Length: 178
Image 1 (cartoon, rainbow, N blue to C red):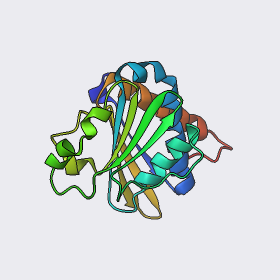
Image 2 (cartoon, rainbow, N blue to C red):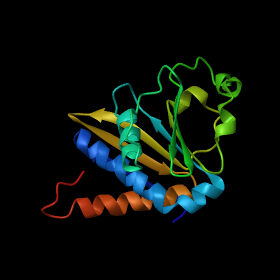
Image 3 (cartoon, rainbow, N blue to C red):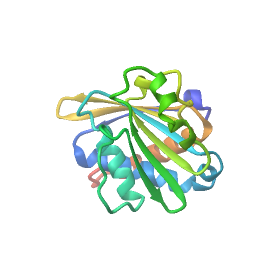
Image 4 (cartoon, rainbow, N blue to C red):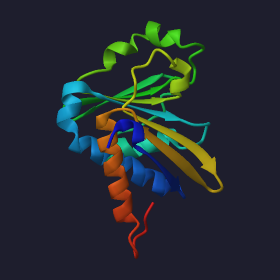
């Protein structure tokens, strides 16, 4: 599967469905740990306020074993976590006034081997961020959320396939599903 053709859309009917998707993403990252140690992993989360971006990252971190507080980085811009030997950086660029603020922030040095970078509001740093491995766009729809995923790398496509497979398993008859 080429990254350009790797995309998916899921409906998340409630917060628990969002949490399941975040947990599946974490599981995909664990499976790809060796590659992440070598080259890093970047995923972006776009969507309006209240679309579930932080909830998804929080669920991912919980599945990765983070037990302490998982705060939104809206005011701090960055919340760092150590997950085993990987660094997990949760960014929120909502407060950036222009993309150049990413350059002056010094955050660029945090991207690369051994790092997982989750970026909320990536459009506020457009043109300055590295190409993400996986893009997620969340939107409020009725009582739930719609999420569109697009892989931009082979690693992103592999993670996306893991998400598809995990969701399919959860949606078998007699399963709660996401």
